[in-house]
Each structure stands twice: as structure tokens, then as C-alpha cells.
Amino acid sequence: MMDKTHLVDEITGHRRMRRNRKADWTRRLVQESRLTVDDLIWPIFIVPGTGIVDPIAAMPGVSRMSVDKAVEAVKEAADLGIPAIATFPDIEMELRDETGSNSLVPDNLINHATAAIKKAVPNIGIITDVALDPFTSHGHDGILRDGVIVNDETVDQIVRAAVMQADAGADIIAPSEMMDGRIGAIRHALDAAGHQDVGIMSYATKFSSGFYGPYREAINTSGLLKGDKNSYYISPANGTEALRDAALDVEEGADMLMVKPGLAYLDICWRIKEAFGLPTFAYQVSGEYTQIKAAAMNGWIDGERIMMETLLCFKRAGCDGILTYFAVDAAKKLAKSR
Image 1 (cartoon, rainbow, N blue to C red):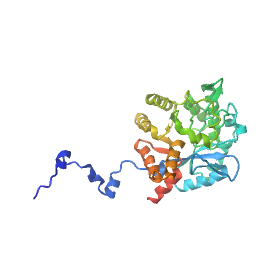
Image 2 (image 1 turned 45 degrees about the vertical axis):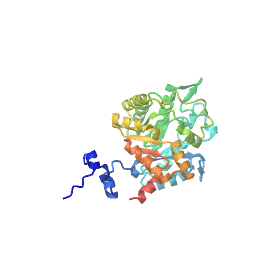
Image 3 (image 1 turned 120 degrees about the horizontal axis):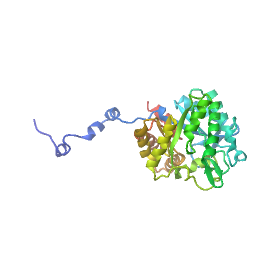
Image 4 (image 1 turned 180 degrees about the vertical axis):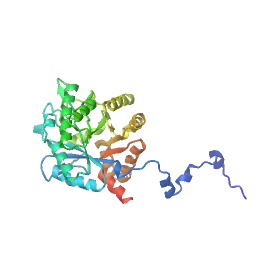
């Protein structure tokens, strides 16, 4: 028999990587990471009133919704198989003050939305945030005293707000304000109130990022913010500090960990998953979403392909799920590919 060995066989030691890539069936057979609808959490924005679907200019395809319209949208999400939503309120300006006191009103907008959605769509998980930025007149995540975000007083307030959110039906509390000690304080308060089954998804590593701009437009805080959030968010330069932050949250009783933003911090996703083994999530934030949408709208990229590629990248980086404004579109795409 004629020897058909090629120089390439000698160079590679007869190991050819393309063998497993030669056909669709082999590529599917050896695929390492998979994205499913079970990986998707859909963040939504709630506004007061009824019958409102208000498009957000900085986030094409995303709208603020009144509670009744949010209920309808969440029903669609549940029908698509999306397991959970995350709610963010855009309350009236006249209700915002220096301390974010409306966060402590039992039937405030976020709690009203939780109760209505839980009643209408009981099979979907509801994740709520207790940060004060939607409620403050200065746009910060905590209480501002003499130019300083005070840690302990803020923790006291978000603990009370967290219990109210659990009372309203929240399944998971996701504190994002990055105050020291908040996870342990919330856990103790939830347990004392009989909410042992309510989980905590810690924003374990929330970075002081430029990717949040469109979100701040969505909840109308961009024009309110005084100064920056560098004294309580993590510097984008600091990976080891981020791991220390996450470790404290694990010790304090976090059930799940989140990395925010997402794509620029895939290394942190991987390190956190490897270090702690807890369910790990990434938040594909508004700036990431808008970049993709804007480039797609200009015809510069294939937006649907990039949407799916970026979501899959989070899975490759060790994430168990992704908070993404693409959730509904991705779920529809996944349903078509079954």
C-alpha cells in the first residue's frame, strides 16, 4: 500500500485538531459549553402607572414597563422557559430623597411589582435589588452624609428593605450597593423574619465601570449622580481584591455570586467559580448590550450571532447563568434551534 503520510502528519505527530471539526455532527458531539434557556435571567425596568411601555433611547429594544405590562411580559418570558427575572424600579422624582426612604415603604413600586408578578406568574423566580440608587436624590447606592457614603447606616436600611422585599414575595435578594457586611446582615434579618428559603445572590464583584451608563438613564439617575462610586465599587484594575470581596460574601452566607459587568471581567468569573464553587452569574450590563445593538443597527456586525456568542462565552468562563437584556431574544433563538 502506498504510504500517504504527509509532512503535516510528521509535524503534528499524526494529531490533527481538525478531525473533530470536520462536520456538524462531530462539532456538536465534542462541544464543551452549551447555552440553554435555563441560563437566562431577564432584568426588567418598572415604572408607576398603567398601560405604559416606554422605550429607553439608550437601550434599543428595552422599555420601562408599568406593573400590568410587566406582568404580561413576564408571562411571555415564563412561557419561553426563562427561569427568573430581576426587577429594577424607576420611581417618581418627588419620592427620591437624601436617604432613599421610599425603599422602606412596604408597598413601594418594586414590592408592588413583585407581588403582582408572583401572583400572576408563580412559576418564575423573582430577584430583587436592595441598593438605594433608584430611591435617592443624589443617585448613590447608599446614604450620603457630608459627602461620604456611610456604610453602617446604609446596611441598616437595606436590611430592612430586604425583609420587605422578601415579604412581598421575592425569591432571591441581590444586594448590589457593595457595603461591607451587608450579606451577613441581610442573612440574619431574613432568617429572623422567617425567610430561611429566600436566597441571596451577592453582587460579589461589582466594578466601578463605564459600562453602566444606559442603565442609569433607564432608572433616571444619570443626571442626579454627585461624584462617583469609587469609594464602594471595586477598581477595574483589582482582580485579587475582587476575590477577597467575594470570599467575605461567601463567609457571610451568600448562596450565589455575581460578577458585574460581564465581558470585560470573564477572568473574574473563572477565578470566582474555581475558588468557591458556588453558583456563579455574570451580569451582561447595559453598556455591553447597547454596544452590540448599536453596532448591529448600523450593519457593522451580525447582532444575533454576537448576542449568542457573548452569552456562550460566559458559560465557557464558568458561569452558571447570565443576567442579560437579551434574555427574551436569546430564548426565542434557542427555541428555534431545538
